[in-house]
Image 1 (cartoon, rainbow, N blue to C red):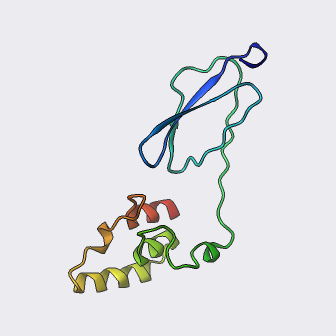
Image 2 (cartoon, rainbow, N blue to C red; image 1 turned 90 degrees about the vertical axis):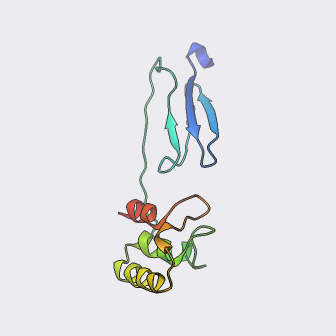
Length: 122
């Protein structure tokens, strides 16, 4: 306990399914990616605390996707869905259907399907 103040635990469930406990004291800050990492407080907080949520959008997503794939195992449909490019998504799905491939069920290394990318992208 710093200056006699209680410590505040935060449990984070990472992408690999492992739970991690990050405990902070008064005056400390914890930053984590909360869009896809589940987090929660295992006990009621005692004392004073504040939460600050920052939302951002990349200014130049084309640099991030320059290699053609955002995440290992992602497909062109993942990218079309992430960008909200409906015409490209329809074309990719039509071609996949002709080949008998279920492209819309393909998961990347994070187990995300194109639908997840579409939901995140809005």
